[in-house]
Image (cartoon, rainbow, N blue to C red; front, side, top):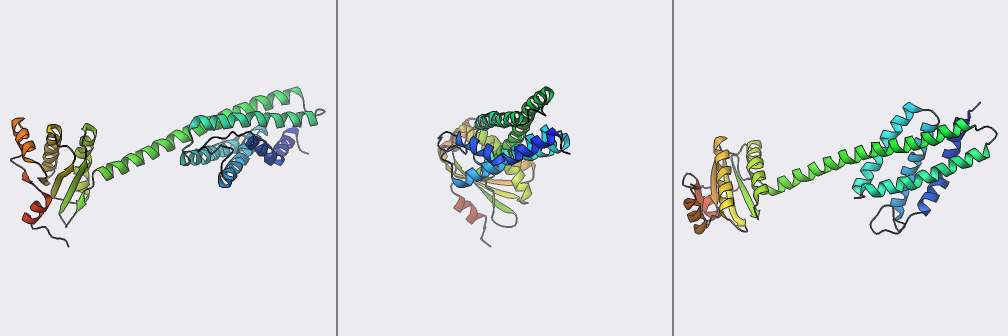
Length: 282
């Protein structure tokens, strides 16, 4: 014979669609939000699927299946976090949506209580009330953890991509490569160049790197100093450097500041350097 907890579990799952419909009906119009009343059919179906899991997870907790709830909690948190990150949904919007549904969920528990007033005792009501609130809190706590971890992973991946794009070492033959530096160079980018370029050269087994600065918008003394330090780092790794694209006025200023490029082969253009080095396309 089913207990009152079992019958509450069945009741909540049987009313999952009604609960979800009521939740969706309370959406506002908000441009670009997955929770908007103007969301497309695919987004709505995603919300429905995820909300069914929400209902099942909470119902499992209320029925006393603690171990199963832990499994569903993690599954729900990772599923929803990945979905919200993909749709660029801020965490406060998720919190608002969950809080709205928490109210609806309790409304259905109250309906069950009224419909089974002869069996439900005060202790059941208190247990379900505290259990539901604790379950929602645990769900959102687990979601917040997953959201943070996934956001950090995404940020690290983006930074790695930016780093790779910003330091494009191009291998032109078995032992030589070109680093075309384009755009402005600030202190942060200069630091990235000094750490990423040597690593990339080592990965590609490059022993001679042509650093072309002709695409840099402004080559000031800071840039000259950073490029000089890069060549010194490469030299310590056994990688020879050739710098191209340095204009005469920058060369003069560098000398006045004690930045000695005399030990480094420099050329006015990359083409000139490649021709002299007899580098040909394979």
